[in-house]
Image (cartoon, rainbow, N blue to C red):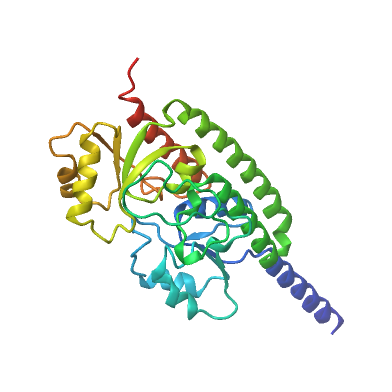
Length: 311
C-alpha cells in the first residue's frame, strides 16, 4: 500500500507539472497582429492564425474549421466589430471561459476618426486629438501605426501572463524585445520616407491612415472607405479631375479592387499605379511578418513617389 501511495503521489505530481507547462490555446484573427503575439509567445507556444488565406477581414465568411478553432480557444485576439463584423455573433456565443480581447480598446492605443471618401483638403484627417471619440466612428486599421503595435504587445503580455502565469516571465521578456524592435522599425521607416514626405498621392481604399499620420505622408484623397461599397460616378469624376491636374504622383490600389475601376480612373492619364497591402497577403505568417509588412508599405510608397522626382 505504501508503494502504491508513493506511485499515486508521483503520478499526480507529474500530471500537475504537465498542466503547468501547457500553454493556452490562443487564436488571433489578423496576420499582422498574429505576428506581434507570436513574438510575445516565442519559446512558450504558438498562436493560431484564424484567417491564413487572402480573405478580406471586412467581409469574411467563417469556415467550419475556423469556427472550431474559436470554440476551442482559451484566448482570442481580434481588432473589433469595426473591422471584423462577421465575428460578432460567433464570439458572443462562445463559452464564458474564453478570454476575448478587443484590441481596438487596448490601453494606450491611439485611434483616429474614420475619414470620408473623395478629394480632401490639405488638413483633412490630420488632427491627432482623437483619443476618446466614439469607437464606432474610429478607423479600425489600428495596427499600421507601430506605436499602436506596442500597445497591442503590452496588452498581449498582460493577458497571456494572466492566462498562463507559469510562462509570465517569458511573455514579459519577449514583449520587451518586440517593443524594442518596433521602435527601431519606426525609425527605419522615417528615414526611408524622409525624402518623399509631402509628395501627394491617392488611395483607392482608405486603409492606411495610421501609417500616413505616423510617418507624415501626404495622401490627398480616397475612392472608398469600405471596399465593399463601390464609388459613384460623381466621386470617380472628381478623382479623375484631381489625377488629371498632375498634382498626384501615384494612385495606390489594393487587390480587392477590380482592374476595370483602375482603368476607368486612369484612362488617358500618365499617373503611376502601384499596390499597397494592409494585411500582408503575400507575407508568410510568423513573428517577422509585422516588420515585413510595414517595410513593404514604405518601400512601395517610396519607390512610386520617388520615380517622378526631378533634379
